[in-house]
Image (cartoon, rainbow, N blue to C red; front, side, top):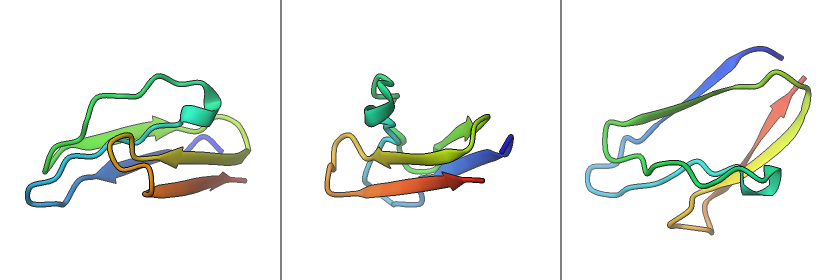
Length: 64
C-alpha cells in the first residue's frame, strides 16, 4: 500500500496501454517503445487491468 508501480514498454515496434477499465478509469495514452506508465496504489485490494489495443493482455496488481 502506498507503493508506485511502473510499467515500461520494452517492445521494439508495438504500442500498449495500462487500462484499469473495471475501476472506471478512462483509457490512458498509449505507451510506445521506451515509454513508461506509473500508478500509486493508496488502497489495498486487487486491481485488474488490460491493454486497450490488445484486450487479451491482462494483469492484476495485488496490493496488501
